[in-house]
Image (cartoon, rainbow, N blue to C red; front, side, top):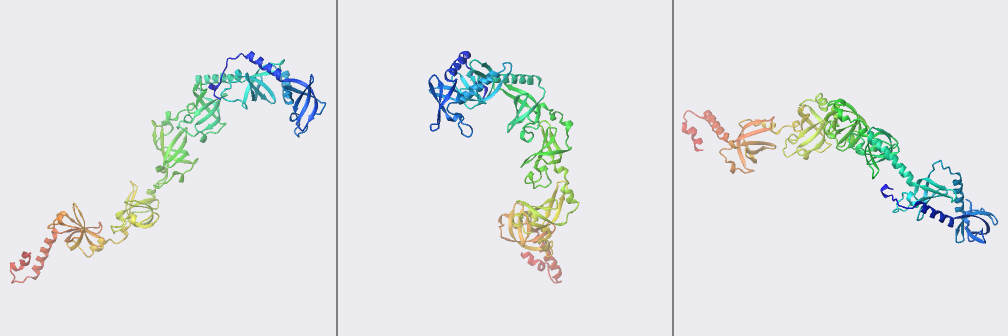
Length: 550
């Protein structure tokens, strides 16, 4: 029950108590009677209670545990006259026990009882303790009228015993106010001293911990547990653990005491430069694993973040849990200290051998190796060779330009490739599959040299020229300035164009053709032929007649 729900009534305590005693005397007289009849059929015993009066007693009140009736006709029996021809042996036993308790009561000794509220009347409540019935006035109960108290377990202290009237009065209010005064004294001392005190964890919840400090419970919110920031208390503490705490504030109305564990311990960030530095190697314990990285405990109330990219040199880390587990101790390197943001970043892979070092010690440019395709993208495929991954670009997949990584490869395929470039500083490796095959341009170059006349079909037009197909997988470029006397705007795809090879390089897989040079070359060839075939009788007009006609 909340203390704000407690009701305190302005009642004449003495008058109310007297009224309660009068009711007890009129309805609960303790008398000695004689059993005159036992009627098992009606489950009744008839008791002569004097004055020519008989009263009925329920047989269940005088049966033992085995169901046997413990009295017979003629036996004397003490009962409580409840009026209207009824008596109670159970009430008598309670009255006798209460009388015995009262007779042994020591006024110099304090009695604190714990019982159950069994009855309610205008003046207050009846609290039963081990068969004894005590009276608790409403004004001393601190019980709300909004809640039915019957069946409620309460603690109270005996405040008055009337031996003549056989009545005991108890007060719950007395104990509560004592606890309140004690709590306020504890709180005052805690807030005044601001010194850490030892508390015992009573209960752990998702939002914090309740800690007993000198008999009063206070809440340590999960944000007040560690200098690391908000933490799950169940990961660090157990109920019954002792912890150092300081008091933060106290809400007197709600009787809510706020405590802090982190303020009871030094803040490591105040002297972080003396504790740790960038480049340091430290031992850490994995405390929390997330898909994007791992939080590690460095001790000294410090926590660092290990990003997923800093776990391994392997770029295909799918989830940190595949490499690390909670509670595991690892060595990490400090790579960033953000004092203002109170953040630490560490790396695990920096302490591991670099795959590129191992690769370059074993492989060289030009080596032919086997690898496994790890991923396929729009621009190529990544192939794992030994401890590293290399890029097989689309243009290195095949001499056939219609083929690419997506059309030719799948993840998991084993492929043979040639190492064509190693950039150790950037950690990049370039691979080629087509380098293991004969180049169509190289085969073409065996039969065609610079100056050879060729005919090709227009495949594509660009601002800078026209691409023509000379043979299977052999293309050539005619630059715009080399198209004369053809007009660029009049050229269409599929059109055949005749030209002369002006440049051919099998290593770079490039050929250039010129229409412009074709005319000059034909003239030169005609002159050479003329010089060989002409006879002494030929005139200049005869020699150049055909050419002039053109």
